[in-house]
Each structure stands twice: as C-alpha cells, then as structure tokens.
Image (cartoon, rainbow, N blue to C red; front, side, top):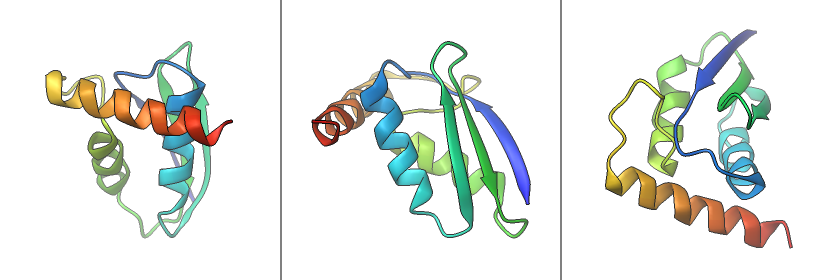
Length: 91
C-alpha cells in the first residue's frame, strides 16, 4: 500500500469533500480518502499498482487540480458543480 498527500485548489466545503471522497473511492484499489480542508489536502491510501497520476487526473476532472497546476475558470466552475452535487448528497 502507498499513501499520497495531494495539495489541491478549489476545496471550499463539506460538499467538495463528499464529492472527492465518493469519486476517488470508486477507483479500484483506493482504500481510504481523508480530506483536510484547512490545509487543502487529500490523503489517499491505495494499492501499489495504482499510479499517483490516476488520482490527480480524477481530482482534476472534478475541478480540484493540484495546487501547482494552472487553475483556470473552467476548473473553478467544475469545482462549484462538484461542490453542489456533494451538498445535495449530504441532505
């Protein structure tokens, strides 16, 4: 098992957290996802056969790029959509 701590952009609330956890746990081989909103980090524990890039690509597709990536308007809009979906799922 490997663990990665990924600093991301656009993390705003528990809705974002819900969506990120749900979507990352859909990837076969990921066993846990922990999010620290204060530090803007996602800690992922996963099987050795999974590449970190697969995780960061999924985060990017949800609108949460790594903090070192360019964060344009489209990614910000995606993150707001992911956030709203997460909030609805928390109701």
